[in-house]
Length: 107
Image (tube, rainbow, N blue to C red; front, side, top):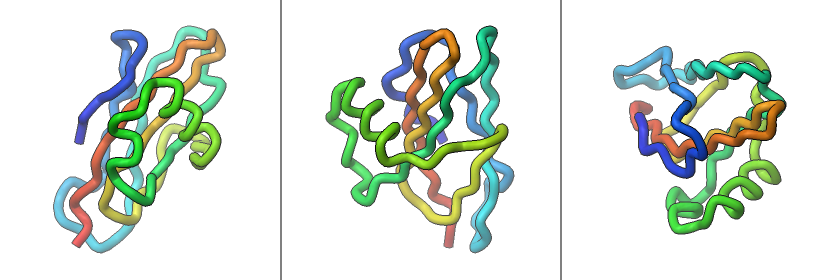
C-alpha cells in the first residue's frame, strides 16, 4: 500500500490500514504524520478512473484533490472499496504532501 507520488519533503504520511486481509466490510486507515506547525488541511480523493492523475503535474494533482476530495477529520478515514486513492495534507506552515495509494483487499 504505497506508491508515493509528489512529495515535497522527505517526511511522508504513513498510512496504516486496520484490515490487511481480504474483507467485505469497510474499515479505517490511520494517517501517521508528524507536523511541527500543525495540519491545516487533510483531504481524501478517489478518482472514478484509477489512472486519472497518473500523468498529471503536482499542481493539477493538488488542485484536483482540494476541489473534489473529502475532508478528513481526525487521524483516520474510512475506505469501502478497492481502487486508487489520493491523500493531500497541508501544514499550517504551507508545506504540502500528496500521496497516491491503492486499496485492493475488498472481495
